[in-house]
Length: 313
Image (cartoon, rainbow, N blue to C red):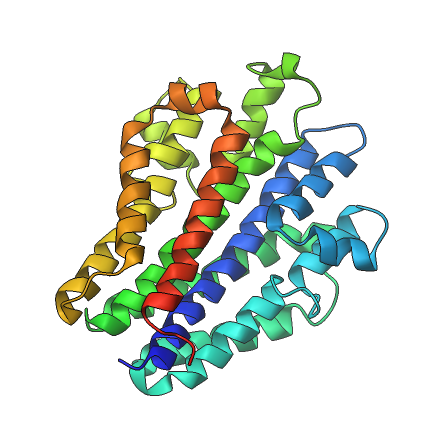
């Protein structure tokens, strides 16, 4: 496969996943803000920081009120990670690789773009926000359904899944980090009812609440929730699951192409690191520190894949 086509597939599905996960990040901040009766500036500021768009936001605004921040993350075309921008870029990449996609996948991507363009043409009212975020998730789920239901399991599918896995790992890590970046007012709140309520909102924001309840009925502790979101490879948005998806599809490419690259060794090292960790060792190291290191490693793997498979030039 041409590197340009591989890159188009990879980035198409990264941008689709980014669109959904930006919506999930907004929901995490929104839900956690609802648990506070006092000033929620710190919560919304942490969302901007965790989304990785602090510099761009600060260049335009000097406050962190909810309506301005939500508009920037949802609709602002100057924000490359906004839902609007990510959806547009996903469609642009889909057009680039149109001949590699089934009709169903192309139509789902095109419908996603047209629907969100209409949905986000005006600022979103706070009362409408949950419904809008739900529709963003639904639209991206339709694209995934078309991918899994109609595409051959070949290198086209592999690059799509690698892009999805990398972006999902990055965004789940960032959503977890919202919890400990600036949300707790004091270390004395750790393990308190407030702490547990905030962890529960994180579960709901990554559609993990019911799955976690099935496995941990009546035992909703911060350690159990963090372990589920980081190390449980059965949950499709956990860091361990996302890392496994990247590893598996890179291995399929290695088998098909007869070549292993540096990116294969990097994902193997990340997988081994996750296997060696327990949630106790992660908390001992520091959750925020662990997550930041994971995000950095994940980004490095993504850049190495681009070099190994010659997405550019």
